[in-house]
Structures are given as structure tokens and as C-alpha cells.
Amino acid sequence: MAETPNILILMVDQLNGTLFPDGPADWLHAPNLKRLAARSTRFANAYTASPLCAPGRASFMSGQLPSRTRVYDNAAEFASDLPTYAHHLRRAGYHTCLSGKMHFVGPDQLHGFEERLTTDIYPADFGWTPDYRKPGERIDWWYHNMGSVTGAGVAETSNQMEYDDEVAHHASAKLYDLARGGDARPWCLTVSFTHPHDPYVARRRFWDLYEDCAHLLPEVPAMDYADHDPHAQRIFDANDWRNFDITEDDIRRSRRAYFANISYLDEKIGDLLDVLERTGQEAVIVFVSDHGDMLGERGLWFKMSFYEGSARVPLMIAAPGMAPGRVAAPVSTIDLCPTLCEIAGVSMEAVAPWTEGESLVPLGQGAERTSPVAMEYAAEGSNAPLVSLRYRRWKYNRCVLDPDQLFDLEADPQERVNLADDPAHAGTLTALKAKSEARWDLERFDAEVRESQARRWVVYEALREGAYYPWDYQPLQKASERYMRNHMDLNVLEESKRFPRGESE
Image 1 (cartoon, rainbow, N blue to C red):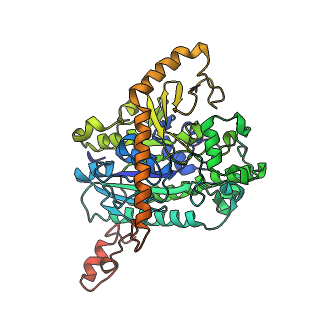
Image 2: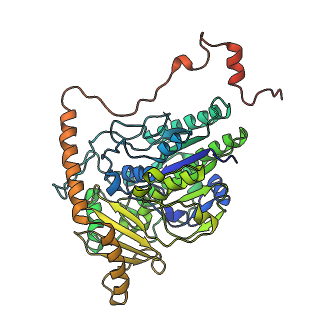
Image 3: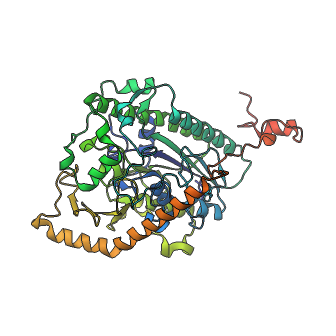
């Protein structure tokens, strides 16, 4: 492979990393992802920077946590002066392109991508801003609710299927276009799907794959509201759980559709990998999700917490110099920006003092890593920021409103037993609390989130008065440069658009 390799990033939405203990679980119908896993460095304990779409994605792209990016929630602006991997690679001569979702909020809808093939599936304005000034208030028109669970089932099309079908189509067409050689630069194509994000609705042929699935009920059943920790109770309230009666059949159907949509994605990804192979293109391949989904474990759904189902994500990298195999060390999605730059031979020296991620390339070469993985959450369902450290076998969660949480993930992978008050683990708690306090000033963090929210509410309400100019990305279709037009030479056109050229059979 070239010294400046092509890079294909395959991103999915809300895919639970516990289903990828070493690539896809054996029982998942995901043959293409399993083939990719066989040639990838597989990170079994990869974590999101923040268990929500926009903050998790801004951190993935920039290599910085939400407290640095200021993308605290799904309506916080991603500032144009924050370099992303797309900026770093483009600056070094790469063609950078996005097909699909990245949940950018604000007028900059590119963030280093030279080309964007689709619009986003979610709005780009400040309308989804939470408000810490009104604790417990539920903003009904955009907060999740349990209708995604009670409405689970089969459909041949949906809003999200329509979107991902389009994302895959444009990505495939782009790969063919890149193969034609009209641009000599190396390329980085990011293909970002919205499945298996709820609503839990799947096409029949994928649904039927899981008729006899043995995993349609969660391992940890629903708990009484009073038995949950305070943040989990806030998530229940934000999701309007009291107005829904969740049955065992609802749970089975939701999980079945979710698994079916993993298979739907697997087919899309297989098609893209087939295009690469058929066109003879080589590329580094990254597979990752922005965050997970609780899938009914403990009675919780969606994301918004630091529990494993919500916070852990699949991560696989197939790249020269990174050996296939399982890496157990905890890592973060903020590590991907420096990893991509190292793979491409691109320097991040200019912003190195402010980059929080660490390259994963050494781990793919047998090196060890012991630095903690940090997570933050300051969005809907919270009334103050929450922070977490995953350090070796431990996970330590802290919030000024809640009791500390300490879990031993080796002995207790389901996080059933909070050890924070156990005298036998007082030393571990003290050590992790000191690491957390050295990293985060929670009072300052809270003040910055509140300032951001208050500003955005003023701006959003102002901009919705009178003429409205949306920030949603409008894909540019240059119709006069497509197919055959009279400023083109037909002979040149037909030869240049054919791939491969010169083969008669």
C-alpha cells in the first residue's frame, strides 16, 4: 500500500459495543463485518467520548472531549476553528469526502470535508438545546420516548432506511468515481450510516434472520424505578417511561429489529467493500460507532449513560503495520483522529498540546497502554455534567448531584454492584477520584454548559422570528457537469468514465 494510503471510514450509529467482544458476536448475521474483523486490529474495550450523537461525533473527529470542543449536546455548535481529521488530512493533500450523518450543528457543515454527498438526517440548528435552568422539564417534541420500543417491528421503508439507502448509493458511486483516476490525490471517504439507531424497524428479510435468536431478552431485566441510580432515573423521566406500558413482546421485537438492522448495515458495508475489490483499490478501513444502545438492559434504552451498553462501541482498524487480533486495553473514539494522522503520515504537531487522544497504531503493533479513558456527558437527562474514567479493570463515575460509582468490570461486567462505599475498595476509589478531580473542575464545567445553553436559547428563538434561513446542508448537484453536456467531448467522456478501460471481455 502507498505511503499515503487511501482511507475508508465506516461509521454506524448507536451500535452496542458489547455485541463486538472480538468482532461481531458469533450469533450475529454479519458475514462482511466478520471478514473485515479477521483482518483488523479489534479493540474490544473501545468507548465513546460522550454517549450522544453530536458530542460523540465532534470528539471522534477532533480528538478532544466535549469540555474542549464545547459540543455538549445535540444542539451545540461545532466551532469552525477546531481542526478535525478531515482538516489534517486535507491539509496534507488528501481528498476528503463525507457521505451520510455527522450531526454538525451550526453554519459550518463541512468541518474539513472537501465534499459532502448527502444532507444530514438531523437538524443543524439550536432547537434541541437542553436547559439546566429547568431541571426535570421534558421537551416533548424532540426528546426520545418509549414509542420506539412499543412501535418496533417490520417495514419495507422508513425515514432512516431511505436515508441509509441514499448514503450507501452515493458512497458506492464515489468509490467508482475515485477508481477512474481523475484525481491523483489519496482519498479519505467517510461513510456514516444512521442505523441501527432507533426506531427499531427493520426490513422483513433481515428481520427473518433472527426468528429463533436466543438473545431477544436482556441479560439484566428491568429494575424498579426506585432501585436505579439518580442519573438512570433522570433518563427514565426524559424518555417519558410512565406513559408507556413496555411488554416482554415489545422488548423482543425491539431487540430483534435492532439485530436485523446490524445485518442490514452489514450488507451495505459488504457492497462498499466489494466495490473496492472490483475496482482494485486499496484502503485502510476503520469501522466504528458513535455510541451504544442499552437495548433494555436494566430497563434502560438508547444511550445517555456510562453503562457499558451505552458507552462501549465497536472499533476495528484494518491497516498495514497493525496486526490483526484482539486488543483488550481500553481506548477511546478520541484516539481515532491521531491514529488516522499517524497512518497517513500527517503531523498534528501544530495542535498537539490541545489534542487529548492517543494514536492506536502502537497497540496494533503489540505495545501496551495504561492511561485512563475519559468520558463526559452534559446533555438531555442530566442536570449537571457527569464524567467517567475507565482505568484498567475499573470504571469510576462522578457527578456533583449523585453518589460516586465504582465498578469492577472484570468481576462484574454487568455493573450490578457499586463498590464506591465498600471499605475493601477505598484505596481504588481514592486513587480514581484524585485522577478525576485532577482532570475535571466540575463546577467550572457546569458553568460553561449553562452559559452555552442560555446563549443558544436566545439565538434560536431570535432566528425563528421572521425570515428563517436553515443551516441544514444542501448537497450541490452540478447537473451541467454530469453525464453528457455540449461543452464536453463525447469520445473523451465515454473513455474517461469507463472503468476499467480497454477490456473487451
